[in-house]
Image (tube, rainbow, N blue to C red; front, side, top):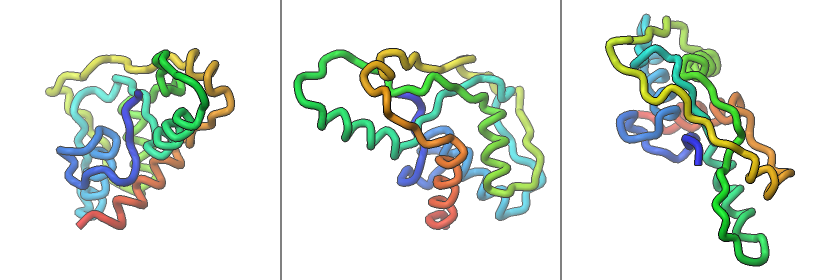
Length: 148
């Protein structure tokens, strides 16, 4: 499975998944009117994200298919986003006006994490994923409601 994000995860940015953690931290920076938002590394590594509601919907769909299902399938979209690109989307959608700063004193993780979706598309050709923009917007809305 790709890196999951979406409503319902922890509100502590140190315990949540990566994209959610960035949203939480950026919302805090927005509230404090921080002039800068620091991201560890260069922002160049790419990650494939999957919206938690899509993952849940996919699992329900898979269980409802009659007969045995023994072949592993990546629940994937075959689309990765650079950390920088993801941060810029979050910034735009949450209205944070500060500057994104990439702290290159921290090492980047793996340069590229994206799953092949060929078997997934064969098994579930009609499955539609939520756009990343819509998923991030809904996740921001969730955290705006639940963060202290």
